[in-house]
Amino acid sequence: MKRIVLLLLFPTLIFAQRPTFTLNHDQIETYSYAEITVHLPSSGSVKPCLDVRLTGTFTSQLNESTTTEGFCDAPDGSIFRIRFMPTKPGTYRFTVKSYAIRRRQLKNVLTTGLAQTGSYTGTIMATSGKRVQPVTPASTTNAQAVLP
Image (cartoon, rainbow, N blue to C red):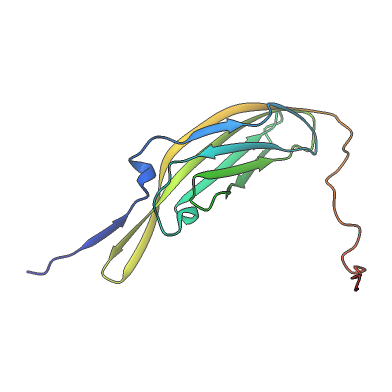
């Protein structure tokens, strides 16, 4: 009888403590950004930044939604961040979710899946401010280098 070996690679985050979420400011100016920091236990993985997925949905008072991905901000995968820049004044509801990416290999076929590990909801108030649009470079074609 053949034995089928399943290889499950779960970050320890599924079994360890839940992630903690922190919002840097609950009131910001338009074209400034709110940042949500997620602290996770170290997974001990070789590539810990690839073991977690962070998504956020931000919804305005007019029910206009924006979904964005977070990013890893620590070599050991213990800190992730997600940022949102409102373009109009008003109240924005948000939900940020963290997922552990699980990989399963059966023979030579690798499949991946997501297991939600935490979520955070709240509101951000955007007020009119000095900024009228995002800062962008004036031109990238006329860049000049200064040589010694």
